Image 1 (spheres, rainbow, N blue to C red):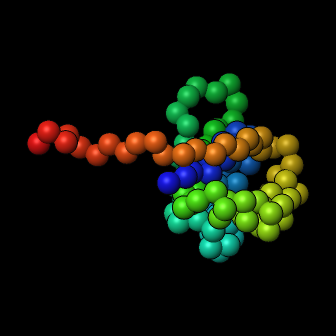
Image 2: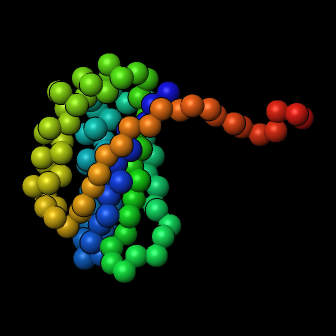
Amino acid sequence: MYIYNVTANVEDSIHDEWLKWMKEEHIPDVMASNMFLSNSIFEVLVDHEQGCTYSIQYEFKDMETFKLYEQVYAPKLQADHKEKYGNQVLAFRTLLRREHNYQGDPRS
């Protein structure tokens, strides 16, 4: 299993509007591509001098699917975000591959 992770630092002045837009518009648009299996939003719990940081995670099944997303859907979706928020949101993207998933105590 793979995760496409977008870490975003959001200026305080737009935080509430940005989070609402992400939940109600941007993420539904990303998920409408049918390239991802699920989505989660996590707030990164660190002390910041300014802004809030989030990890937005999209689970996908294989690298071919992600490459298709990158080529067909990502350019417009990222451009829409940049046009709306400019430099008020700084983001970087990483790909994660699940190496192991531990759930509960296997000895019980």
